Length: 211
Image 1 (tube, rainbow, N blue to C red):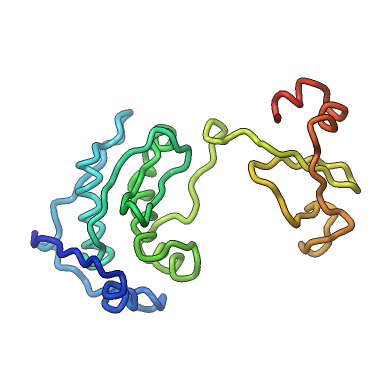
Image 2: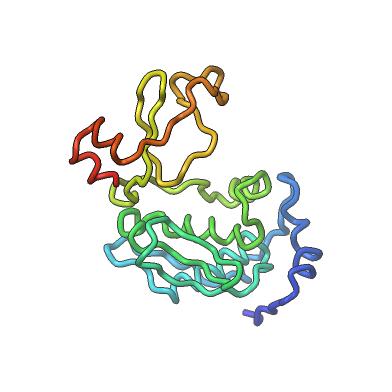
């Protein structure tokens, strides 16, 4: 395999390559089969593939789906994060969530392809979705109760009393049940519950669980 040439200039990379992904109808030129490395099958076992195997999969996908234009990046497992994967622009690192893929080992190739798209498009906008459709990458990871962080904030609807628990603070949010037409409704704007209000509403056990 020819040695990958790494262009450190983001502008040059954009000028040369980003136009390939602007339109959904645009397709990369087919790569001859003989130019591709030998297919790598990820074994469906309890053991996740090695970083070296992921590195080889990256090279395969880069040739097959991106025409070999993606720059060199590091690939590493993360034992801390609960999400499927992430891409750090500053570090040039794709991180694969170990805990997530211990639950869903069959998704590891899909996660790798998803994060590879982020190398050229950090958003999940139209361009990202067009590339994801073309290469068969999922837009969202699967949910699992053991991969959820506990809620930090509790909100109540002043109209119906429905409780919403969230990890992040809400700024302008109204009750999904009482709002009409799916738009923000100030008459049922969610109110942040303080600990003493939670205690009065649910008792000490609920306060400890959500505090």
